[in-house]
Length: 615
Image 1 (spheres, rainbow, N blue to C red):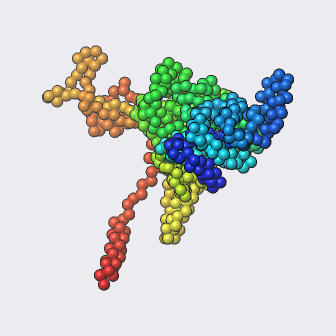
Image 2: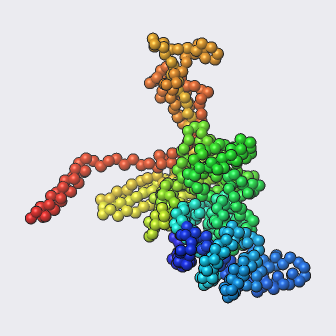
Image 3: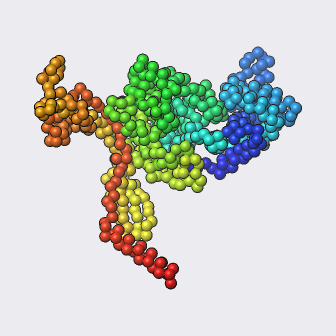
């Protein structure tokens, strides 16, 4: 799952262009030159093999007064062409007219490709390079790179872009994780959303599906999904859609989609929450890694207006989270984008931090969102990932899998999988990313998901301290401890009913009392003759949803406060998913005698060493 040495070598070679820029450009500006020139060289190299055919089609159909574009695209086998008589190498061959010829070459791209360079502000960068007498040197360097699809396939090219963006982010002190998601996390998510679609994955079946990413970044999630699908079923087709806020990431994503022969009009620029550019679309599959813990104040006006005006006909009907974290808004956005169950349904995966699992009391926006997706039976599974998996944060993260087409054995249930221990240490850390999931880890988690049943993880420790691990399926016997060793069992996969996460918050009131200790009664209206509550003694209790609140009150409250009562009007239903509590395993402390024996042994060794030093 690591980035390959070939990819690292190529991205490092490309990044060396920064040596030319040093002095005339600040480090934070290197990427604004290197990224668009990399895209330009890639597009140029991909078009070279069919260039002569394309130009012949251009001349043929123009002479007949017919728009040649469809015929040129067919000749290129791509959804874009360049009608210039030059290649980048030809442009380089005329140094005296370099700026003009390069501009003409860019303008000769079909509109979809030209738009990419507009969002890179490419003309602005080339003018600046020309004034610094660097344009020829930079272009010469890029022309020397072989970025043809024979030398660098689409998967490798995607990794090259990711590496370059990471280097750019480090140079400019930006957060790389805003731009892309680790490939092994994407692969796990793709495995999970496709896991139960046997029809799509059957080789030879010409199935067609749509996939969407509302936080598309550079398009990594979409491209990995396509690669996965084609590996399993080359006859299947995945039509990709996405929206991205960052213009440079949008430009790279669009370039990647062009080379993959996707319809780039499906990739939109803008803020997904305030301006859904694909408002009329529903999708079969969706993936997203929205920003963690980022406030949504900039789009608050538009989001609140949609919530209040459209309610459940819009995206944000169930509720709004606190302003400091907008990630659950993306969850609701994806739910709204699901193809209806009657039309085949949808499944999506979204990466969230721990906050959406439990933040917010009953009745809060977060709790109401959880209530909606659980009561609608949309949550299929939640998988805890290892920490230190992302480039810009080391916090705990979780993959939520939601669907409106649950198989019969999953209806009314949610599967929780603790995959936090399935990782290997990276040879070299990348920002906050110190761990990665290997192929075996991804396969194991995918299998646990497909099995949809309880399972345990047995950690076997031998007498010499060597450890191995084994998954123990429900009903299977755990391994016997080795001689002098031990076996530690911990829950790995657990199945819960949706209502297990629900609770009712009841308000427990106690009466006001006067100076003589007598209960104060109401004098008017509905409270006349009834005990008046003392707000300083008010308390709340959370009662499991499947338990009668009056039975709970009688058992847990009245024995301690016999004068208390429940204010029925204030009872609220809430939902939370205390993930860690379900997977916590209590380990009793070692016996004191064992600890004392260890201390004596260590003390004896220290005394012996001190004796040797004084001898």
